[in-house]
Each structure stands twice: as C-alpha cells, then as structure tokens.
Length: 468
Image (tube, rainbow, N blue to C red; front, side, top):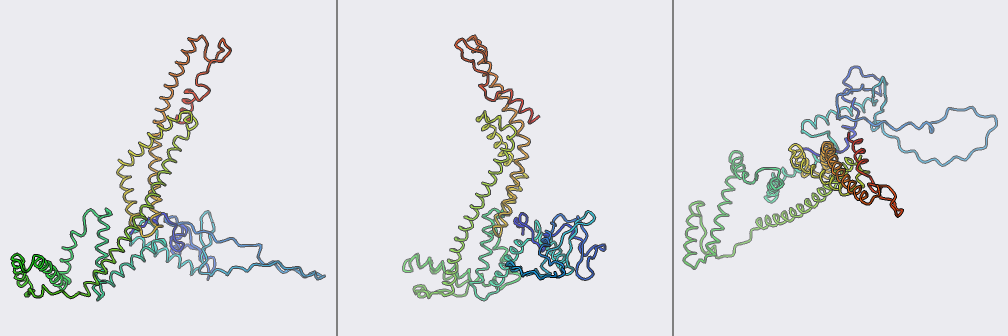
C-alpha cells in the first residue's frame, strides 16, 4: 500500500527522525564509548539518505544550577524574602530522552544511553524492513502504521464474517468484496469489470475446495428459477388455457430437475413469510442506504480536496508566470494589453505541455489515483503537495524555455508600433513647422515623442539588459 502522506509528512521520531549516522550504530567496531556502563556513541555514516538529523536536546540551564557552598559571613544577614518559585516539571525518564547531538573531528555524532540506543537502532531497522517488505514509497510513519492497522482490522472483520454461522454476516463479507470491486471499476483503477469474471472464479474455487457450495448454489438457483416460473404461471391465470399449459410445463421441468413439483393447490395458498429472507432483505436495504451515504460523503470530500488542489496549482502557476515576467514588469506597466497577451500566450504554452507531455501525464494520473484511495486526509494532503510540486516545477521549466522568446516578440512588436507613432508625430510637427520639443508661434511647446512615457528605445535597452 502506498500512502502519499508517508512521503510528504514528517517522519516518526522512533523510526526515521534520526541522524544520517544511525546506520552504523552498534555495527561499527570503531564506535567509541563515553561511559563504560551507561552511554554509547555511534560514528557517523553517510549511506542512508532517508535518515534525518536528530534534534539536539534542550540546553542546560546553568543559571538554575546550585551554587558552590560559600563560607558563612561573620555577621548574620537578615533573612531575605524568597521569591515564589514555580513547580519544576517532572523529570523526563531516561528511556524517553532524545539523543544528544555533538560534533567531533568534523563529523556529527549522536550519543544515547546504551539501552536506549539499542532500542532506537532496533526500531530503525524494523521500520526499514517493514517498508521494504511492503513496498512502501517512503519511510514508515505513524500515518502508515495507522493505515496498516486499519487494513488489518478490516481483513479480520472479513474473516470473522466469513466464518460466522449467520448467513447475514457471511453475506456482509461477500458484499464488501463485490462493492470494492465495483468501486475499483467505476473509479478507473481496473480496465475491466471484475464482476464479469467473479462467477467463473467462484465456481472454479468452490468446485475444488468447497463442493458443498456448488450444491447449495444449484439448489438455490433452481429454487429461484422455478419460483419465478410458477409466479408467471399464476400471473397468466390458472383458470385460463395459457396458464394451465405454462403450469404443466413448469411442473414437468421441476420434476425432472429436482424430483418434486408444486401442485396447483400450493400455488393458490398465501406463502408463509420466510424470517431469514426478510432479515436478509432488511440487511441489504440497510447496507444499500449506508453505501449511498458513504458514497455521497466520499464524493463531497473528494470534491473539496480536488477543488482545493486545483486552486493551489493555479496559484502556483500564476506565481511562476509573474516571476517569469518580473524582470520587465516595470516596462509592461506602460503596455497593459501587451502584458495581458503575454500572460495568455504563456498559459497556452503551459496548457499544451500539460496535455502532451506523456511522462507528466503519467505522474499526474498516478498521484491522483493514490490520492483517491488514500486512507485519511493527511495522506491525501501529502499527494496534494506532490501534485502541486509536479505542476510548479514543470511550469517553471517551460517558462524558462518559452518566456524569453515570447517577451522578445512582444518587445519587437511594441518597438515597431512605437516607431510608427513617432514617425507620424514627427511628420505632423514638420508640416506645422515646429520641431518636436520646440516652441510654437503661440508659445506652446510641441509634444515630445513618447509623451513622457516609457518609449520603445528604453524598453528595448531594458529587455536586452535582462535577457541578453
């Protein structure tokens, strides 16, 4: 079972939140012993990237240490009022203390009491073995253990229901398998409908391991089939020719297959209620109601998570686009339409890559599937973090490749448009006989090209300075 939370969440202090040097704890013959009976040091090892550094213990409060005995003064001083002292917290048990981190000869070490160090190392090795045996994607965390415990509880419940003498409880176990298979098919986790092959699989397994099940199925299928046929004969009317002919045909077939048949007098009587059948129907209706409620709740939780994930991805992509155009943001403020067009083009480039990049699409699909089957919200949030990082890193890569060319094209278009405007302004002022920036006969100043705004020349220089 793979849990996204196990990757994105913090590691357990007992299993993974230990230094990178724990691999060789008590395994290296060169380990130094600080105390002959109480403390053991472990040399650093740099072979396990999954390990993290153990946080050092709290510093010792030297101010509250008892002072050395001082000689009594000749004259007794008047007793001073003692300030109120808060009750000290209870001491931490020796086995619950964290390891002490220190540095020696340029390497980091962790000092544990001997018994505690052995427990930490044994837990670390057990966690690694469990992660390897179960094929977990990441270290074992408390969330991983909770999920595994939940799965075991579920399997135990299925075993208990299957072994029960109550058919209703046995039906609950099989119903869980059927519903799980349907959810897997409807959720897209399987390419085929498992229900289509379950009949053959059940018959094959029962024929070799439980022939009594085959006999029971035959009896119940025959009873169910003939119940429906007798009902059809009664519905056709036993006083009519068609009803009598149908009843006779059903009676002959029932006699041939089961060795018995129902007489007309039995069919006209009101059947006695079957307590077991009624109970099974009640359980089925209750299970159906619970299933519908769970499906609605699961859909609401998924929609909430999915909408939040999409919003976070959109926020990060917008931030990546803003960072890509930040070097020329001052220039683009004078050209709002150009800035809008640049952002639209960058988003189109990102959308194209998100839709056509097969490797990206495969990772995204895998992350969404893992999030869909996550056992709790913390694990699902871990897969959300992975999805956001996947989109963000890919967007930043695409923007690094595409943004300079798009900004260059926009700068060229702006420069061409600005040059046309300047030429037109220059021609107009020439016809009036007043040069650009000169003084007209009425004493007014002719407008300067660019109108005091950011002109194409400074735009081009700034762009070249940023991207060259």
